[in-house]
Image 1: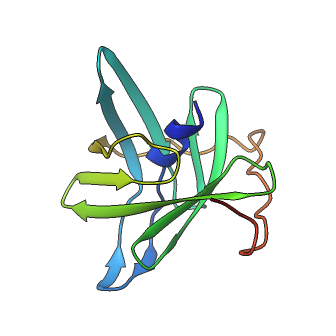
Image 2 (image 1 turned 180 degrees about the vertical axis):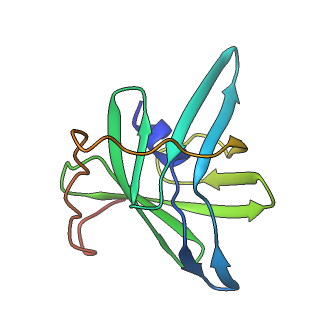
Length: 121
């Protein structure tokens, strides 16, 4: 399930080529399974009951579930398609933006961000 953490991204972050907007509702298909991921501009992302915190560093997507480490993935955005790779993924995954994000309920807490040195390898 941790590989699905990589399917999360955020809005209004700076990347090497300028401002990148990644907020929205994303859909990914792997085999027979379809996943929906809600990504918000407040650095939260949600799939099912799981909530994560994200950040973009250059061309990498960093994700944490609050376990004290960042999982780091390579990312490439082309319009409404986001491809992520590396980290704990066996192969690259492409997501399609299918709509805007829903607001995060106040009752849904975002995990604390670990220090940048706390990375999963």
